[in-house]
Image (cartoon, rainbow, N blue to C red; front, side):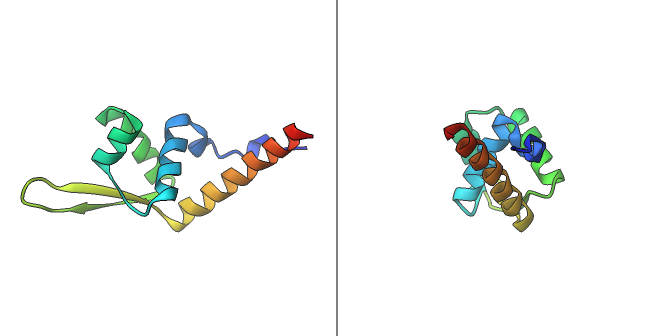
Length: 99
C-alpha cells in the first residue's frame, strides 16, 4: 500500500514542483530565467521561492553588477534529498497503477 502522506506538501504544489524540477536539472538558475521558463509573475515566483527557501530546499545568491544585481537559485543538499524522496513516492504510485 502506498503511503500518500509521504508526498512532501511543500514540493507537491505545481509551481514548486516545476521549480524543484528545473533546479534539479541545472546547478543555478537566475530569477529572470525561472520567470521566463515558468511564465510566472514576479510576485508569484517570489512567493514560491520563499516557501522552498524557508523549507531549506533552495538557496540563493546575489551577484552584483553595474547594470543591476542578479539573484540565482540552486538546490541545497537537503532539497536534492527531499526531491529524490518525492520522486521515489511518485514512482511507487506509478508502479502501483501499472499492476
